[in-house]
Length: 174
Image 1 (spheres, rainbow, N blue to C red):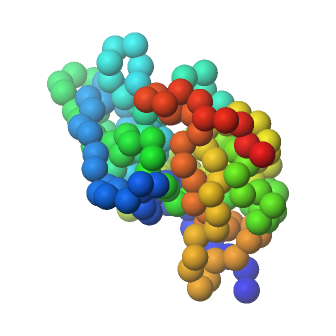
Image 2: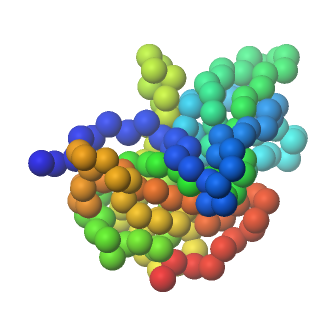
């Protein structure tokens, strides 16, 4: 049976070292920015956070744990999963077919698209055509163990940050 195409961005699954995998830090949002739950976010020069674009020159600080639409004035905040050792789930975009051979390879997310205004969830996915033995934002750890999830198009995979604000860059994919 084919995997269902239902992207919801990135969501926390577990922590590489055990313990509380779901701790967050509250960050001020860049004025006029919209952030959806599950969007990767970056720090900008004003000390605020906003959504990171695919292949952005800066690296992510984490994944948004909530949804916020920041007005042009005033202070708005979003909780961010900013621990570089959190393992996240994400769906691939079916632009290529992921297999078990892609474990420990790295990849970036697809080009940013605004999230779902009804659910307030991100619709970001891992770019399957971008996965390889290189430096990229995420490292694939494996397939999420669910009965309706198999290697192939729209597979849900476990990833960790390969490039992260607090860690810099980990080794390239294999």
